[in-house]
Amino acid sequence: MEFMEGRSILVTGAAGFLAKIFIEKILRVQPNVKRLYLLLRARDSNSAMLRFDTEIMSKDLFRVLKEKHGGYLNSLISQKIRVVAGDITCEDLGVKDSLLLEEMIKEVDVVVNLAANTNFDERYDISIGINTMGAKHVLNFAKRCEKLKVLLHVSTAYVCGEKEGLILEKGYKMGETLNGARGLDIDAEKKLIDDTLKSLKAENCSDDLIKSKMKDLGIQRARRYGWPNTYVFTKAMGEMLLGHLKNEMPVVIIRPTIVTSTYKEPFPGWAEGIRTIDSLAVGYGKGRITCFLGNPNTIIDVIPADMVVNAMMVAMAAHSNQSDETIYHVGSSVANPLEYASLQDYGQRYFQKHPWINKEGKPVIVGNVKVLNSMESFQRYLAIHYLLPLKGLEMVNKACCQYFQDRYLDMCRKIKFVLRLVELYGPYLFFKGYFDDMNTEKLRRAAAQVGEEVESGTFCFDPKIINWEDYFINVHIPGVVKYVLK
View 1 (cartoon, rainbow, N blue to C red):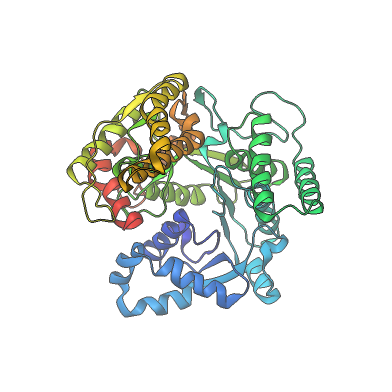
View 2 (view 1 turned 60 degrees about the horizontal axis):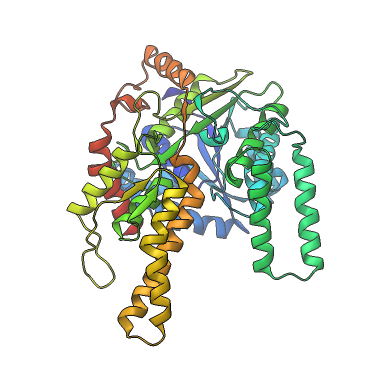
């Protein structure tokens, strides 16, 4: 891609899943990039460099790049990459080296904000610091960049909350809420956090209690205004700040849906961390899930990570020097919908053919999962199959043999695990929305007309080409088992 040749690009959240794929892709397809400034949360440059070596370059993701460049790779890295110690929760991105900060202000052409805290129930103070105020600090820094062509911010499609029907690629106005409730004010939310923390500390609350209270506060505030969890609420507020404060700056917001392992590049199936749907597949494979809640006909919108990165790169080039804000949904629910029942089927078929080997070295034999389509039927099933047996085991646990004690503990773990997944992911297993991707489709067509390889080549981000059965059974689930579960 010619746009990136000779450019200097700042990447925040550089140790994240998408960021690593983005970095690898640029170095592999456009080694003539001028420089990549990689912002990593760290105390100093030595700590940042250690994170770069251990959390980025040591990953198997970079093996194709290493094979391509061989002994020259270290030279390429030293020429093209500048590791920056910083923190987007602070002004000036927390960069303490004033000379480096001035260099970045003079040199950076593109800012890519990939820093985020994706925990659904993170502490409210932490989540708002990164996802909301972090977006503001990145914007303020981008405004100071003398050569800036575009700011690209990665959000999430699920800032829509639990909306139904066609969800448009449109932004949020300051103070806009999903349920019509009035009074959403980001400064007031920050003051509420500060006052709550001050009050808890004045009462000499333990760190664990403060953590719990801050998590509860995040969920309460999110639901007050119509969002299901702290993550999507704070990401929505981050979008609000960008739209409100950007002035004439070219801003692109990428909203991926559920991001899965790589489809094609640098090789199929690379994954990192247990993502939303993987929690269900892994729990099933390990024998921890025999029933779950959900509508088998619900569309689960997933998109491979390399397609998200390709869309980011094409969007960067398309919006260079344009004084607008454009939002792109990068997903599959319109172009190539995937039903929850199919996803469940793929997981069962994979783990029945390739069973998980437990700590004792024995294969975990899995059967069918009973999917219940209402909370009432789910609670009834739990009571009959788990809670009543558990009550009986509890009575004999202390007096009986090790077998009953083990069964008691195992059932406790299973119930806790399933309830936790239901709490976090329940809203998405009955999700009735699908994501309009008209802007993304226009971007694909425009890029194809100017010769970019977006159909099935280097910069493809078209979900229509994916065969979900082949992808999940032969690429994604094996990738999760190999790279995440090891």
